[in-house]
Image (tube, rainbow over all chains, first blue to last red; front, side, top):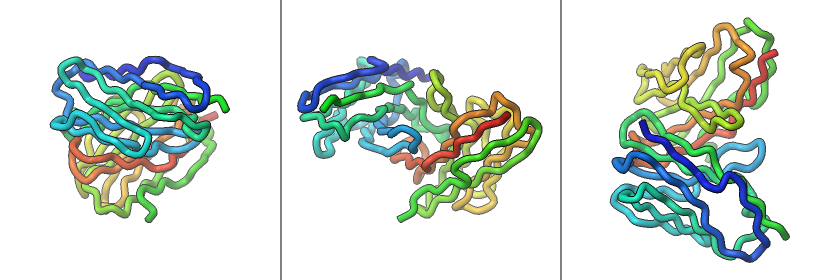
Length: 112
Length: 113
């Protein structure tokens, strides 16, 4: 059974810093990995999807990488802003129909 | 431009009452999912559907039933609510299994007293 772990559970950094959020998974047969953002009391907003054949995806100031052999994915946020404050979730899919396996998230605070 | 819409957004139930949560998607997705999110537990899959008329159990299906009578709708039912079902419920959909992006609704916050 796939297990997904996110470290750290919480992170607070000053505005303007570049930062990396980590996600590890136990089953290297992962089919794809998706990063989400969740604001307090809100739903999940998809940020990036990395297919198993890809190594990374970029969207604006966000870059996500996937290394299946080491069981790791990272989300890089460049030039962080207070508006980036949220909980970031990673989730892996085994390629079947039975949905995503989620990590517990990293709660990110960007200090103005 | 609605995406995935959940109804209702908030609900308080008394123990033993029943209710149905509605999820509607307008993206013509085949796959739909119901998750619950609890503090310290992350999101866990309750039930899912791979197409109209089909349903299957996820990780935590006990106490819930689902139906997918129309492709765009996925209903989650609680027949006899228990305090342990207090949670935030999220519906999601995707075009096909695993390989494509999943889109989530805004959630339903359910409290059972």
